[in-house]
Figure 1: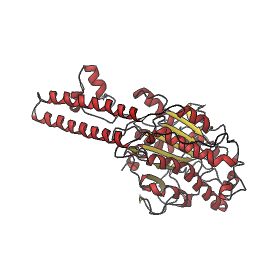
Figure 2: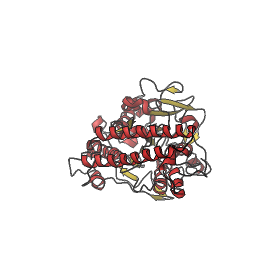
Figure 3: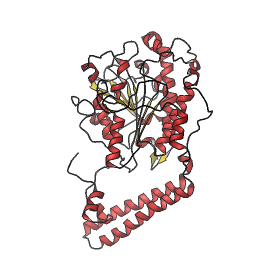
Figure 4: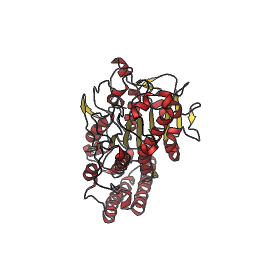
Length: 442
């Protein structure tokens, strides 16, 4: 990115010029906005104990995702065109390593990798990606309170850090989260129409100014201005469509009933996960959060967490993961449930929320991660990451990409930062700069 470039709007303001001069200045994508002008959002959904590689990574070579997704990813089948899978070229494993943990002699320290999944540092040596995104939005776009951190099982672990060694504590009580996000806040139809009218009046003003300005230009510049006016009319039509077809139900608080549930109880864990997933989706759709982490289970391993609703009452999740291939049947069922109850729940809500010519999901990047490659060895190599949503067209989804060799997770985090308009050379430990843009966006 050219550091000498300036925001066109800021430059015009500094020069004392009006909006009529906008089409004559070179443009660049605004940070944190998609190519369509809508904001980009980032959501990370994480849990422990790794995955079942043959039931998570598609078989075959790089290219379009297979018609039938692997068992663990089956809940995402309706949105397979929005999925970007990453796999090693020759094996059904992940190509992403936490190299910084190997540097710290933690090659088999999977239960400590929550601190690395989003920071790109060993031992949480710096801020996490969600924090960097929120900081950038506050600085460049004056967007405050963009960050939201939630959890679904009481614990001391977190994937989100505001600075080195300083955790962002997740909200684990959906009742409290609901109150903080939505209590007493509504947007009646009159407010929606008033917002449209204010936006439309600005467009009318710009159109009139451009018409006057163009009368003094040469032929080529008149054509440039006319093209810009046509784009304004297209935007006005888009706003009109939004105002007439989008009701307040598009931004509605989800139900969190019944009340009074004890979320320290395993029996209420499925309800807690659904509540949190619905609240995360609503917060993003309603513009109350743009950088979200959702940690489904503590990084300690899931001791005592059973799944009787899947007819798996014994042993607990951690013990099942430690069985390796002997526990693959149960582990696959559990991970499939996690994808159904949390990831697909969020995806379905975002996909159903119209935005421009697509949906909120189209302008979001969801990163799903687990803290080790496979539960029997706790390895921090071959970490299973999955991307859902293109971030406004930044990522090319609906396919599987393969890498000939392992790459540091720092480079994946950097590409997501780029999708969010944060143009940095690297995320996390500066030893591992670079990105995966050329593979993930082509």
